[in-house]
Every structure is written in structure tokens, then in C-alpha cells.
Image (tube, rainbow, N blue to C red; front, top):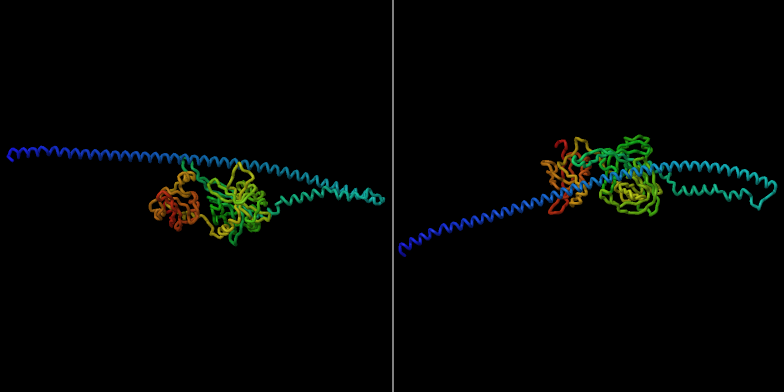
Amino acid sequence: MNEWEENKNENNAQESWPISGSDAVREAMDQRSQEERERLEEERRQQEAAAAEARRLAEEHRQAVLAEQEERKKRWEDYNRQKAAAEKARRKMKRRSFVSVLAALIAVAALVFGVTNFLQVRDLKTQMQALENQIQSSAVSRSGVSIPAALNEGNALGTVSVAREASGSLTDVSDIVSEVIPSVVSIEVVATVKVNSGFYGQREYETQGAGSGVIIGGNENELWIATNYHVIDGAKEITIIFVDGENGTAYVKGSSQENDLAVLGVDLSSLKDSTKASIKAAVIGSSDDLKLGEGVIAIGNALGFGQSVTTGVVSGFEREVTFEDGTTMKLLQISAAINPGNSGGALLNAKGELIGINNAKYSDEEVEGVGFAIPISGIVDIMGEMSLMEPRVPVAEADYPYLGITFDNRTSLYSQYYGIPSGAYVYEVGKNTPAEKAGILPYDVITALNGTKISSYDELVSELKYYAGGTEVTITLMRLENGSYREKEITLTLGYKKDYN
């Protein structure tokens, strides 16, 4: 190869380099453009996902607000319905009082008429006897039948008396009531209620309630009284009114929301000797031996007016009743009237034995002549266990416990809508608090405290008031894992609220 060809080849090689470099730059730019397009596409997808999530959360919030509004509306309607029912019952009671007075006046009039009639008949008998004596003295007889004998055979006054006495023996329960009523008490409760007030959040106010109870026993130190759980739920003060009108302060010995049952204690040393002499424990019977149609007697503090008595028959057994708060129980159905205030009172058989605890938690304006009671045979052992428990006295303010949790007091309707277990819903856990140290996490749902069932934040607060700071407790909770809730138990030492203020 000559020199000219070598130079030509060299020049050609030099001219090809820029072309090759331009292709590499173009490829690099294309690659960067592709990466930029992919990055922008990924950002677009993320923005769309974030927007979709925001829309979902906004819709959930909207649904929650609507559900909360619906719940408040329902509570308001329930309040108005209960108020109307109470007014209806008051009017009915007033009418009954008028009828009772009228019946008493009629009875007095009938008694006066009966006495007058009796005196007239007695005078007639005296006259007839005198006439018979005259006839006998004259040796005269009419048809061979003496006049006094004819009167005795047709004595309408004696027949009516027997009929009244027989009728009274079927309906008169005054002897049973007078024997048993010293074991029935009225209960007055002062409780704290929390109400959602829209933009103002939750507000607390005190409310008063009334119920009934039955003295089931006691020892040398205290008296034991059985009642319904819902009567004393959330109570700050519990006052017992005995048969002689004297009052006593009660404390909770044990309670079971599932059985709607509680046993209260009263310090005997706080009662007058006259009160202790006037009261006595009920005789426990058996609800297993009841028959359909068997007569029953209900005694309780109906509508807060004081002890009243209603009668009826056993209408059915093991009726499954669902209450407004969603709880379900199997109860004894009776025809005796059970009104608000009757809750916790005594249901008796014809022997005066306690065969049930009245339950007025179920109410329906459209239903009349239906009452319910907790059968005694199913709860007698539970009552015995509760009676032996240590008194549950709320701790002093200085010893009040602390968990370190912010709760979201969600309604039962909200929880059902989103499939959240019933309990106290944990929204946030504070740093270096007893809850954080024990391992409680946000969105956990506390369902029990030391074995006592917890259905809401309010119930947890109500239960915690019996535990002082420094106490070790077992908390049962439901935790969301892999899309489903799993139960866990956590041991926790309560702090002192005063240390975290």
C-alpha cells in the first residue's frame, strides 16, 4: 500500500469517529427520555393512587359522619319514645288510681248496703221466728214446711258471701306481698352520661335513674342485694331505700353485663336497728319447676313511684330477646306488667319464692301485656359468687390509674359497618406510657379488663375506676393482622394519673 492510500484510510477513520459518537449520545438521550417518561408515568400513577385513597378516606369519613348523625337521630328518637312511654304510663297510672278510688267507694257503698240488707234480713228472721212461735202455739202449720226452714234454704246473702270468699282466694295476693315486700328495695342512682354535641365534642352531665333490687342474704358485716347490671351501669352513687323508708349507701360487689346482673353490698353498721329489724332476705325458689299458665307476682319500683305489685302468669320460657344496645338474652316471658323502674325487682311464685329478677330493659310502645324476667335457676350460682367478692369501691382521686391511650369512642353502628370488634378502640398511644411499655398499639380494640367484658370506651373507664395506679392487670384486646382481628392478652402495670398531668 502506497503512502497516499495509507493517508486516505487514516483520514476516513478519523472522519468516522464523530458519527459513532453522535449515535452513542443519541442513544443515551433516548434512554434518559425513556427513563424520564417512566418516572413521570410512575408519578402520575402515584398521584392517581393518592387521589383515589383520599377520595376513599373522604367517603369513609362522610359515611362515618352520616352514621354518627343517624345514631344521634336514633338516640333522640329513643329518648322521645321513652319520654312518651313514661308519660303514657303516668297517665295510665293516674287513670288506675282514679279507678281504684272509684272501686273503693263502690266497695264501701256495697258494704253499707250489705250491712243494711243483713240487718233487714235479721229483723225479718226475728219476725218470722215470732210468727212461727205464734203458729206453733196455735197448733197451725202451712203445707208442712216451716217458714224459717224455707228462708235458710234460699239465703242469698250466705251464698254471695261464699262466692266472694272463693273468688278472693284466687286473686288476693296481699298475704304473700306483705310477707315478701321487706326483701324488696328501691334503688336510686346518680350516673355520669357522655353525649356527643356535634362541633363541641363530647359533653358530660349527671343523670338520675331508678330501679329495684332484692335482698338475697348477707353476713355479720354487710347486706347483699341483687339487681340488673343496667340499673347501676356507670353509677357514681347508689342509694338503697328499704321497706321502712330509710336509706343506705350501696357499693358494687360484682357484676356481669352478659347476664345483666349485679350484686350490691350495704354496710350493716350504717343502718338503724329498726331498719335491720324490718328487712329480711327473700327465699330462693326454682324457675325450672314453673309451668305455663302458672301465676306469678312482680314487685318493684315501677316508674320510680315506689314499690308496686302486678300479677300475671307464665307466658313462655327461654324467649330470646334482643335489646336496643345489641345484646341478646334468653328470658322468662310473663303477662305481669314490667315498667321502667321495675328492673331488678322480684318475680315470685304463689309460695312467695323468688323465681326471677324482673327486667324492664326491653320496651316497645306497640307491645302490651308482655314482660320479661331473668330465670333465677340460671343465675343463682353467679349471685352466690358475686356475694362473696370483695367490695368494689372506686379508688381515691389520688390513686386514679393511667393507661396513656387516646381512644376513639366509635358508635356500635360505625363498628358494625366497618367490621370492627366491639370494645374500646385505641386511636393513639402516648410515648413512655404504661400502654406503650406493655405493647399496646394504635387501632387495637380492648375487649376485656381482668376478665370483665368491655364493649365500649365508657365501659373501660367505668371499670378502671376500681383499680389504683401500680396495679398489674390483664388486658384482652383484638389486633388487626393480615386483614383479620386476632385476640391477644397483655399484662400491664397501671400508672398514676397524677404523675402524667
